[in-house]
Amino acid sequence: MVTTVGGARGGRAPGVADARAVAESVTDPELPMLTLADLGVLRSVDVSAEGAVTVTITPTYSGCPAMDAMRDDLRRGLSAAGYSTVDVRTVLQPAWSTDWITPAGRAKLAHHGIAPPGEAGRRAPGPVPLTLQPRARRVACPVCGSPDTEELSEFSATACKALRRCLGCREPFEHIKEI
Amino acid sequence: MTDDSIYDSLADEHGGDARWAFGTGFDDPLSGVDTAVPDGVDPGDVAAYSLMLADDALVMSQRLTEWCTNAPELEEEVALANIGLDLLGQARLLLARAGAADPSLPRRLAPDLPHEDALAYFRGPADYRNVTLVEVDNGDFARSAARLLVFSTWRLALLDRLTGSRDAVLAAVAAKGVKEVTYHRDYAARWVVRLGDGTTTSHERIAAGLEATWPHVAELFASSDIELRLAAAGIGVDLAELRGEFDDVMAQVLVPAGLPHPVIGSTVDNGGRSGRHTDALAALLEEMQGLARAHPEATW
Image 1: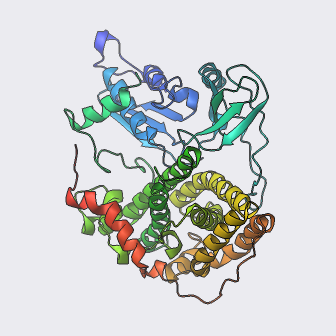
Image 2 (image 1 turned 60 degrees about the vertical axis):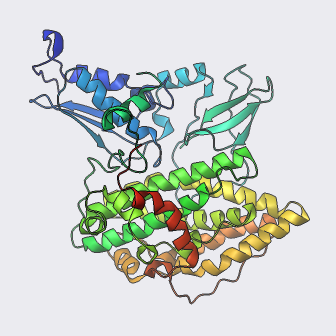
Image 3 (image 1 turned 90 degrees about the horizontal axis):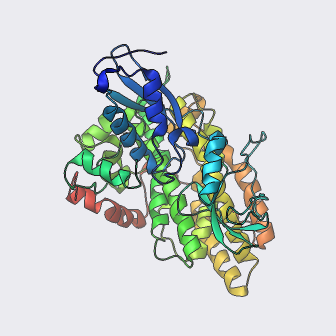
């Protein structure tokens, strides 16, 4: 849906493609190298005939405090781009998965020293299995590239990350854990 | 957008240099979500049920945050705080779901506040519906690990079944929660095995921690009337259904930990769900609610 609206700066009417470009460029306040598009939380951008923008996003973790900042940044970015009415809506289902982080987003994470997630995949039917040993993950060190790394904790500075250490270069690093 | 944007946007929202003090300034976590209650179900029941699930998460979260600056190692402090944050997020969604199902509830408590704030900060202990397991004091690290294992094993089994709820909001909150609590349960289970299979002292501590937890376990499987009604309506989960999975998972942990499986009574007074709590809850709420009650809608 491409709808043109009046009232934009510079004489050009912003449409849904422009709104999408603005929304996609908003970044995660806690992972500022990633845009909302890279992260896979931006679900839809629509512009009504009257020029009102509706953006739909999905939360990463239930308690992620970055969601409020993302909503604010979306409103401010779209307002600055000439949209007078901006509605940021939440959609809860299907639940966000790290599998939705784009290839570009994964490359940016690795470039900034954060190991991207492996595949979360789908769970087999039946009760959620208990995992008493650290999960067998192959996570390459984002600093030296060594595949020889170990997990220190499945929790780290933000809800989405685990803490690891490289047994090659000895550097600690963070890893986006699969969810 | 710069790294500073989060602070800029908060200042923009409240004008000048004001910053939010507690919930003020947060968006409704269900903004834009269809919160209509399914046909044929009493919205009051859905609200009450959402409160039960919210209160379990909120009170457990508050206990976990008490470990901030007190945990034995920085990594454990970060882990416990993250688990608390996940549960706080679940609580916010569920409190908002309760308020959307029955807006008269938060309106009676604090008409000018967001539903989640009114429900979290302006109910006294008798109106909280959490199971008593989550409200008792942390004790030492082993006791906290034991409680977290019991809680997350129970909640994961509950949320996993709730993903099939006819209430789309509860189903969605549960689907996300399952992913989160899976990590919480693994964390607690690994600590219980490590302590049980560790030194004489660590074994004694975790055994004592579990002993202190068992008196609160039978209550986890005793549904209130509301839970039974909503389970029959395809909205909620009958807690009695969770017992088999709970026992299986506990055995998977307690055997390698070298710890005995508890004898859990079958008859119980479901105190927490009826608002009958231990004194520990009143003290916890006093700390959690003090600022919000003294300075409603405070900014700084």
